[in-house]
Length: 400
Image 1 (cartoon, helix red, strand yellow):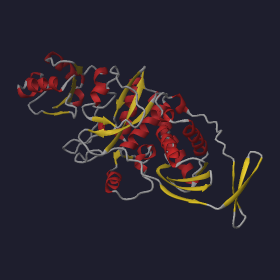
Image 2 (tube, one colour):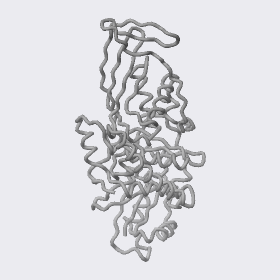
Image 3 (tube, helix red, strand yellow):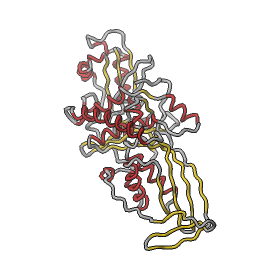
Image 4 (cartoon, rainbow, N blue to C red):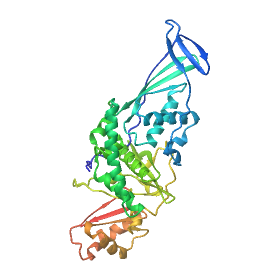
């Protein structure tokens, strides 16, 4: 887990615009039954046959998710979505449609990518060609992909599935749902390096075809990712644990660039969780992990994040499974009487971390413990202490 402290994390890459080519043809056509045949009017060669059938029946787990992106699509877009899932499951690397627009395809395609992080080999960019014949058109799409060789993709898929299966199995062995989510959170953070090379490429504005660091594969197999890779990997593992989880686009209040994190449903409540920002490096270069963004509510999130509103996201008002509340480290008001018990709980870590309801209550703790030096009233804390305050201003960590 490495990330330079000076590099504030940018998030999900904005989906690049597709390239386009289109043309009209001189043609003649005739019907035979339900099929329509098109011929070049000059050469007489048959161009193609219209079937115009979208009746693809797929088993799509995203249909069971209340806030899946698929649920935002209209009827035609949903048909395209289903057909894409069918073809992707068969490792097809190009797609042909009839009588659709690029806008319809783009909405369906991006919905598939958001709902299905397991399709790691599909890139966010694609090229397409549109051929029109009067009232009829064909739409051919070639996405940028992990590899042009299906065998290489299938080999990567096997490797990916093995790693994913091991993580899911280990998570299921945890004693309760809180521990399962914490295990996955910790595993991804401890085994992933923030990929500065990818974020620099994105920031540069240079053209690119396929970036592994934005995928679950980059995070779980190659152990390098930017925020979209972190969030795709977490989403997928949670889905394998039968928990409702999706991705959220937005920005960090302290930053200009885009960012991506997750929402998660547990016990009838929804929470936000941001693994990228729980994977910091301290100012002294020490790698660490935090729980500042571990299952937080909308009110907590508002201190540091702003939502784009481009994806379906539930109201995240849950509090029970927030790390600090669940572990007894959350306080509505500052009271010195609770500090010793919290320090004893975290004694082996040689630090004490506390969350307060507001930055104002945290400031009371700083004034009493640090400024007035009452932290030294705890017998095993010596004169060498330092402290940090979280981005939200609500979490105080004292190192000793």
